[in-house]
Image (cartoon, rainbow, N blue to C red; front, side, top):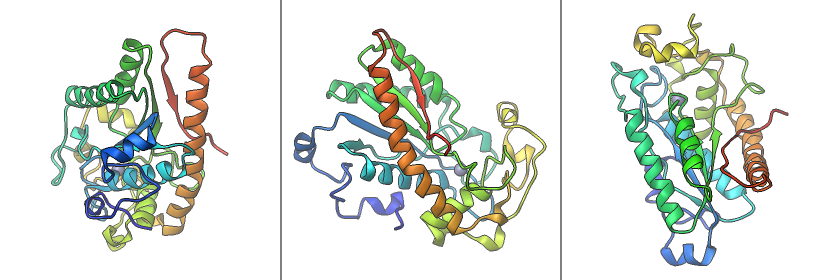
Length: 266
Ligand SMILES: [Zn+2]
C-alpha cells in the first residue's frame, strides 16, 4: 500500500485510523486517550529522492502504527516542515527555527491536554530535529499529568548494511521510499558516499558544505524488499514500545515523568 500526505486529504476515511478525515462525532465516540504526532520535513534528499521524503515516510509509519495499536489513537496530521536548516543552501529546503518548532509542539500538546488527551507520542521522522528531546523533557517537567514520549522513525541497523552514521538519503531512506512511494524514487540518480564526519557536524555546518551531493550513505544498495522488511519489523516494535513506556511511566512512584521510546532490537 502506498500513502502520501498529498493524497490523504482526498482519500475516504480509513475506518482503522482516527485522523483528521474523521468527524468530531467520531472522536466523541472513540474517546482516544493517546495522540500520535508525526514530524516530517521538507528538505533536499539528494538527486534521487523527493524533498518530502521524511514527511512521506513518517506519515506511512504513523498510519501503520495507528492501525496496529490496540486502542484508538488520535493520529494527528503530519507536520511537514520542521528544523531543516542543516540543509540550507539546497533547493527545495524550507525550515522552522528550533524556537518555532518548540512553540508549535508545545501548543499542540497543550491543546490536546485541554481536550482530555494527556498521552502523546511524538513520532520524529527527521534526524535534524535535535530540539525535540528538550521540548519533550520540558513538557513532562511542567505538567505532571502529561505523558509525552519520543519515538524515532529511523532505527534500521538490522535491515540495512551501510556504515553506521549513514544518516541521510542513503540505503535506509531510499529503501523505505522504494516501499512507501516507489514512483517518487529515481534509482538511476542514486549515489554512494562515505562522509568523513559524524552527525555532530550538523551542529556546525550545513550538509551542502560537508557533502555536496546531499547524500550521506549508500543509496545504490537500496531495495524495496529492504524497505518492506524494515516496516515489517518497525511497526510491531513501535506499538510494543509505546505500550511498554506508558506502562512504565504509570508505574513510577509519583512525580514528573519523562521518557524516550524506541523499538527494541531483536
Ligand atoms: Zn530524510
